[in-house]
Image (cartoon, rainbow, N blue to C red; front, side, top):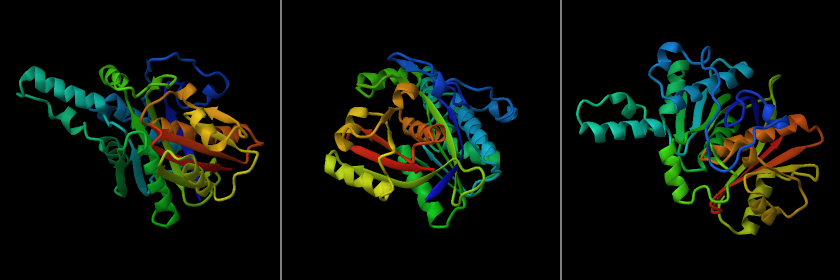
Length: 311
C-alpha cells in the first residue's frame, strides 16, 4: 500500500481546485482544451520562454502537487504520456517542410521527445534520482503507477512524483477522430495531472492506493479476477466504481455498485486515466460513507487497468 499526499490537475475543468465536484463545466462532443492556471510563481520565467505549453503545464502541476504535500525533492519522477509534446513535434515537422530542411531551430526537436516532460521537471527541481517515462496510449498512466507502487513498496523510494500529461493540437485531434479514437466518448480533453506518492502515511495523506492490476483481455471473468486481486479482498458493499466506460464496468461487475463516469467531466484522452484516480481521491474525501473506490479503465476493451483506492 502506498499513500497519496498531494495532487494537482490541469484539465478542461477549472485548474487546481475541486469546483468540478459541485458545479462542473459541461461540455458537448468535440475537442475541449485544458483550462490553464496562471503559470507565474510556478514556472521560472526564464525557463518558461523556452517551454511549450505542455511543458509549462507539467511543471505547474508538479510544483502544485509537491507544495500541497510539503515535498521539496522526490526520490523518483515517473511519468505517463500517450503522445508527449505533440505541438513541438508538429512545429519541427512543419518547419522542416516549409524551410526545406535548412536553418531549423533545434529547440522544437529537442523538446519533442516523450521524456521531455519528466526531464523538464527534473531539471527545474535539480532532481538526479530515478526518472522514467512510459508511453503506451491510454495505458501509460496505469503503467507508470505500477512502477511507482513497486518502487515504494520495495523500499527503493520513499517518495515519488507521479504524473500524466497529454495535449491535443487541432490537427492531431482530427486525425485521431477520423481513426475512431473518440467514438462513444463524451468529448476529447487535454490532461496534465501530478501526484505525490509516499511509502508511509503522513499528516498530508489524502488516500491510499491499495492495489494496481493491468491485464490484456476482454473476458469478463479474467477481468473480474484482476479486479479482485487489485482489491485484495478489501472492497465491500459501501464502495463505488470510477470508470470511463460505465457499460463495460457493469458488464464485469453487474449493477450492484454505484458508478461515477469521470469522462463526462474530464473528457477522454491518453492521460485521462490520471483524472480517474484524481476523481477517486476527491470522492473519498467528499463522501465519508465510502470505504473504498475501484478505478477501472480500458483501452479499446483490450487492455484494462484496475486501481483500488481507500482511505
